[in-house]
Image (cartoon, rainbow, N blue to C red; front, side, top):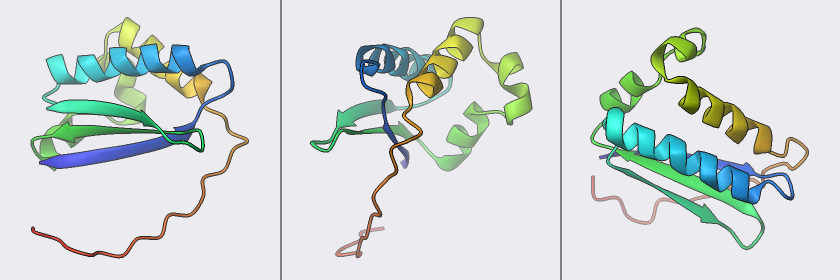
Length: 107
């Protein structure tokens, strides 16, 4: 399995719109592009974390075209949902650094 993690801060008042658009996009990728599933979380600090699960990296990479071909790959309602997601993001909030140490890896 391959997972992709997205993190963002959402503009105040845009949380519901963000959730609805995320669900629409996530369901599309599950139903039409081979994603296994997706989850959306909100941290106590207000950061939103989403991750999508895929059978492998090749399936995930094949689901997302280069930026200039997005309009040809997805139906208009999914493009609109992606634009809405991007519009909900708060560009003024910076991400804290993440420091991790591998404790155990069973790969």
